[in-house]
Image (cartoon, rainbow, N blue to C red; front, side, top):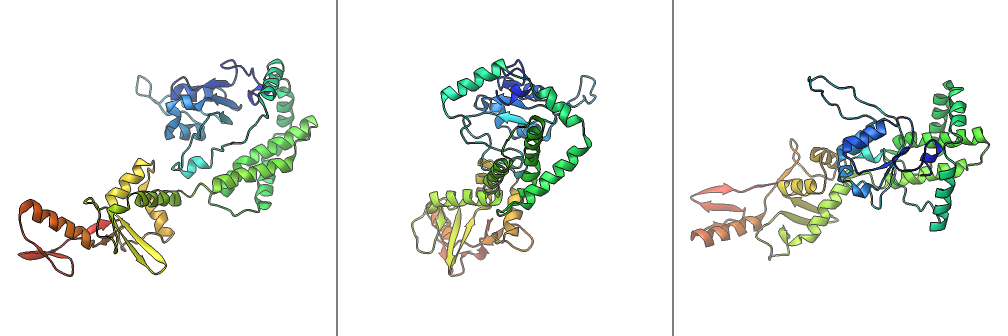
Length: 347
């Protein structure tokens, strides 16, 4: 309510605040008709549509979906350039969200009011005093429009130069976007003679960047997902000192020196990652290869591994089910007439 009261009536559906009771198209239409202003979308938990990555991408990209009219002609696509505030009791993004979204969505988890009484005082004040200073601020900004880009670039350079943390792959992109907030605070101070602490705002921008920077390595998160699955299903993975394992073997674990080589069936890994929301498996594989985590053959993204216990288990089942007798050679070949080598493709 406070953010939209700067320009509009802070009451639901009478200004720039609405909720997710409508369809995703209705939400995008509301945002596009509020181009250039701060929009508030309340109670994200009530809308299944928000969980769709497509809607998140569209809101971040600043344009509606392309659609055709009844004549098969492309309709005009509405565009918008707004700050969108979404309120929710839970996170609107998960660990598998692509970096393209993570660099555009900033989660503020800190408490914004100190008590219910404090919150009610703010509501009462803005309901009786809204949209009072907007004209003055707009006049201040558009009086010298040529300086905006120059001032913005100065803020970007300042935030990047004074950044002391460990830069991640998204650091520059995040600081470039949040420089708009930093510049706005400077303009507001100059326009109205206020004393917003620019240093505190800068420090909080660095806090947001660091929070995202520690969460954005999607390759590491995907690897953690696989390792977590293996730890919970260790009986499905062959190990040198274990003889009792499930009939449904999914891989192999080899310890050597200070390292551990883990092989998992390609189909199992792909299904697991897809189930947890990782859409671009090829991208993950390439990132693992770049990090030198992935052990693979020269011309492919997987490695063929012989699993002796796996073959023995298969042979024993054949013997039990079909009444045939097999013997196992030391080099893991099934012998029945002529030799056939069994190899399992592992990713």
